[in-house]
Image (cartoon, rainbow, N blue to C red; front, top):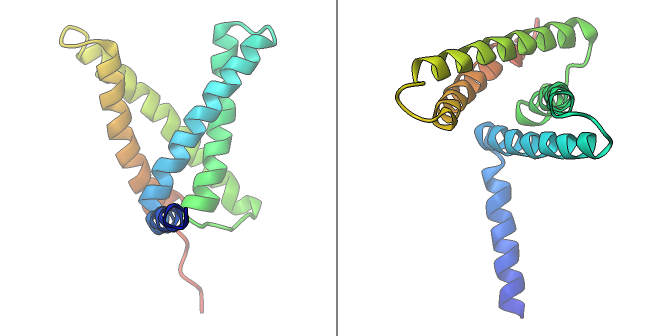
Amino acid sequence: MLSMKLNLIYRMHEILNLLQKPSHRYVVIGGSVYIFELAVIFVAQAMGAGPVMAVGLSFVLGTIVSFALQKLVTFGDRRLHRQIVIPQFVATCLLVIFNFGFTLLVTKLMTNVWPAVYSRTLALAITTLWNFYLYKTHIFKKSPPLI
């Protein structure tokens, strides 16, 4: 029994060490937001929303939740003044729109090569990488102190 408890403590310590890296937090938060979006779809449909409305609602809410968690948790950007947050949110929304177009382009180009789920997965992998880079280096980059 004691060895089980020690093993659990050791595993929790390993997980906490992994979460020290922004890239790991980015992936965990992304996966969590995906699960959140699925929950929104199920709840919205249970409340009578059609599939398009449910997915649209989950997309909007997921974008907002993801923005907040990536900003605050992944990149530790605690600046909350509207002059900072609004441009960051606009940049994030523009990135989401660009990613959507890129995903459709990949899907169109690969239509005769493989199933759409493969195209979506490839596009998701690519956009995940460049989103992380852009969030880290531009969108949530903290300005150096003036003094």
